[in-house]
Image (tube, rainbow, N blue to C red; front, side, top):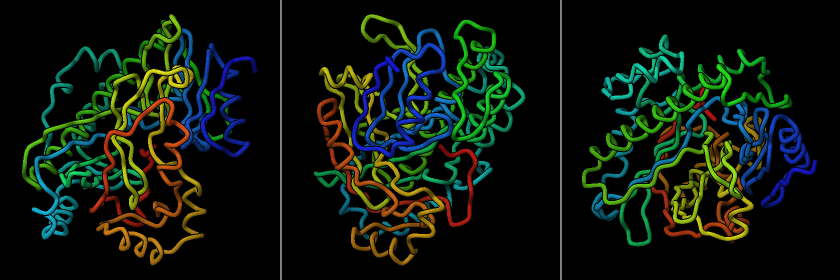
Length: 378
């Protein structure tokens, strides 16, 4: 209980208790709970823990390398506004959303030829499936967004991770390490220099590369549909472990649903489907250091998926989106904006460690449709 835990915002007692329980396992040095935090599998979403010589398989989670990518186009919103719905339909037809999907367009990428990385990860048996799934988005809260900034230029935003490859890797190594799957279980921590730890870290890093490649392919495919050129890009993981130096110590920092925000480092953070997103940047401050240079990855849930389906209606969700001028294909009411906190309120708790560079207003969203459960979401 003497390990420092920095808590941003207000949280339910069980979320803070879960975070404190995590920090009693392994060589945890310090922890952070971001303002969008809520209960997660073994470690809260929005939870950050620094370890000395160890990595938490549970903390990284099942969707290894899940993250956000946003690019700015040299395309004014007014020039495509009249064909926004057709663009949305084209995205839904070309990009694969939902569980267990494969990409109709085979994606060639150098990471599939990196035999040393596949051997080190001990995941060679999954390589062919990974090839088939690269560029698929999945379900749950994973999305493709079209947004416009303060100057009226179009941005493409995406959120998803390593799909079945990351989920299979996490499941395998969690089992090999003797860990348990569930909400209220102790985290599974492995030593970085152990044989198992080395294989897991290699698998995590390969899944991270895979996630980056998938998001980059989807963004480029959407850009081709819209037209124009990319003039700016922001890209981050938020389910990952990084080797970092904090307070003069080299530590493994595990972020589960938290965005790295070192001074000058930019991040793309989305709100709910009907709310503004932001491009933010980390600043150097005492608060930033206490946060382990971490910030939110989204607005954060107020209601779980089952509770949201019981509490809200499709009509309420569509009315919210209509008022905001947002077109939607897919999604179910568990992703309703009413189920989430408001992003400005969440960011206000982190105002001493990050600054907002751009506010992006969504005008079109594509997600997996109703009833498409995705076990590979974060």
